[in-house]
Amino acid sequence: MFDLDGTLTDSLPGIEKCFKHALDTLNFDYTGIHEWRWIAGPPLKDSFSKLLAPEDVERAIALYRERFSSVGWMENSLYPGIAALLDRLQTKGKKLYIVSSKPEIFVRKIADYFNISKYFTAIHGAELHGGLQHKPELIAYALASHNLEKAYTVMIGDRKMDIEGAKANNITSIGTAYGYGCYQELKNAGADAIANSVDELSVLLS
Image 1 (cartoon, rainbow, N blue to C red):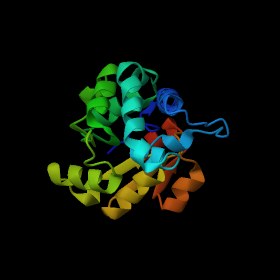
Image 2: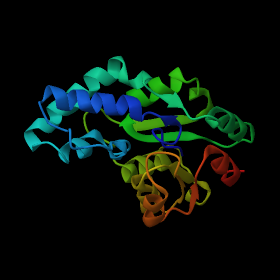
Image 3: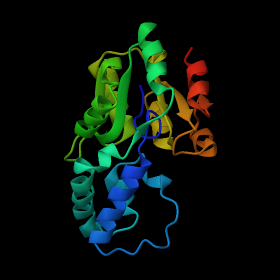
Image 4: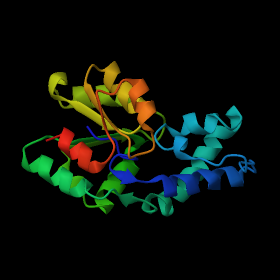
């Protein structure tokens, strides 16, 4: 199971621009915030709730998606080496899945855009209206949907919620420290292994 943002693709440029678009429209002053990696990974509701009043969160999500659906999803790039890794794993007979907290409609669109959908048995993401947003429930849903054996399933992701979701479902986890979560975040969350590069991830999965 692969996370998307920070694991397969470097999507922070688009995420940050869309996040700021929403805050600008709501006249929220974010000039004191100089680091935005924390917004890549968690559900939008969780991230906006850290800054905005509860009554503004849903409006912010709508504004974010307004820009993301038109241009933000393309402000993104596939990490070098990912396509080759997916191709090798598929050739070896591995069943690959995307399990992302991003709305599934966008996960599929991005996977198609980068021509990697063909490598995945299935793609799972959040529902637009609030369902399946958090990693524990997303992983549980994917495990049950495909009758996967936990002993042979690995969750690969760059943030602590990926590792915590794996632990909640009693499966192995690999943290990708080349993404948006640092090595210490992944270690503290209890990752079974940590890859500092796509090459290291390839070795771990060989």
